[in-house]
Image (cartoon, rainbow, N blue to C red; front, side, top):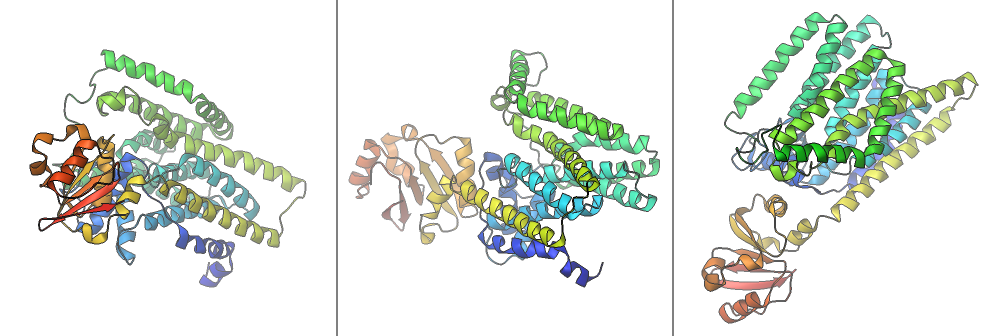
Length: 483
């Protein structure tokens, strides 16, 4: 395919309508894992130019592929670190995934448009966050479709190319998140039954190289919790709480499992080997998740089986997408048998509408998610000159737990030298002047009478009760500003 062929193709037409949305995309982190790892790490990489750094407070043992990709595009983009750049990458990866499926399966334009639209709607349903799980969806689904294509009696040359992509996908998904090792038994089984012995040995050797090299890079770092914070037992009282909660979560989300079961049925009807591949993946992942709650999660998260459905969507999404493709392709086969075809002009209109839907969907999702970033809105109202480097910051207010610390740490990095969060009842009122004097910037989300009296009598400022407001101290002078 020449450059001119690409320019004249539906791909170029599709991208022309999608491009304007790039300038309107915006999105902020929405859950603690993004503040503490998935977005914090690219931000740190950009500011420090280091892959592993002491500035990281959590998750340094995670494999780095997605965060490195995010950091790479941040570094080549003018300006400071921006989540909008990562949102653009996310949209670009999704569109590339659709094009990849079109070329791999040689989809006709009409089938491609309908399937892409429905896939996008599933993606919006499952992936409301900026980064969490999204690359896992794309990689695992790509691998499942590669197996599907391999089972469709591809020519030997095409089969070798697809097999190579499958192994690259397996290594990539491990380098995004180590828990996705759950798909490796399926890959190894498939290579064995298809008699790809040389490829199996090569894959294992390359994987060992990746795993060992990354471990050597951060051998002194770990995301594991210290002993005593996890349940660490299969038979303790807490373990049985986890088992009961696990079953309860399945019942609560039974509709997801029901659709998943139906998807597996369609996959089974299409290919026994593909079904076996997916069944091994599901069983290993499901078992590993249960064991992780017992031995890797903090007890407080384990006993409530935190984020259960979010983790399970990494298994659900590929099955839903493949079953959807099987159904839609069967419908289009029947339409073609009846002589129903889509013309060139209709295809162009469909490409334009699909572009507008994807672009508009991501923009809407981004603005909706950004509106919930209350910490980011609060920090943005603090004057830039009052946020110098190496600042000692104190946040005062109610409900300031560990997740709140992650939010403030993310938005104030790399300016903060010291960050503390205190509720008002934790303040040492008997020696408040000495305590508050340690901080240059004090953000008060909600004040009380004791704090108001102190600020008036000792620092000579009238608080704006109940808040929010912030106090900025420099060279013995205290300024109070409303937020």
